[in-house]
Amino acid sequence: MEMLWKKGWEWFKIFRSDLLIVLISLRNPGTPGYIKVLLLAALFYGISPIDLIPDAIPVVGWMDDAIIVPAAIGAILKLLPAE
Image 1: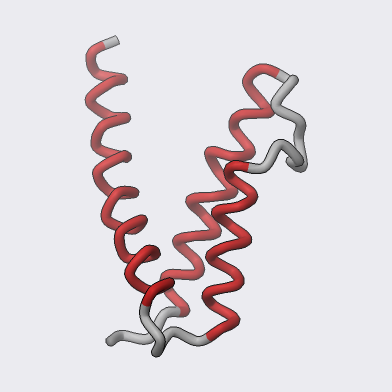
Image 2: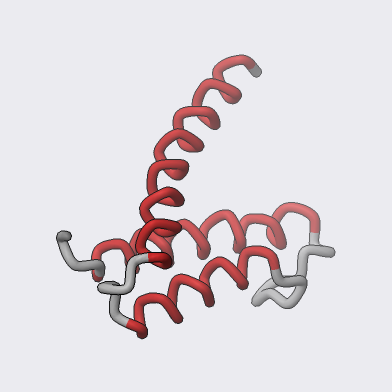
């Protein structure tokens, strides 16, 4: 069980830095508008009760959020300009 928590904490640390980049890019006026819209859509999907697979299905309903949101944010981060 302890190994699972360590692995989860490692993933959180990786995602935490990506989340910080997302928040900075949303506030940056140089970020293209379509990227801001895509980032907001990915974040909204994560907190929205409307999903591809409903959260009422215990494990599978949570897994779509756990897979889709980080994958979308990772793909959008690759679209960001270097500066």
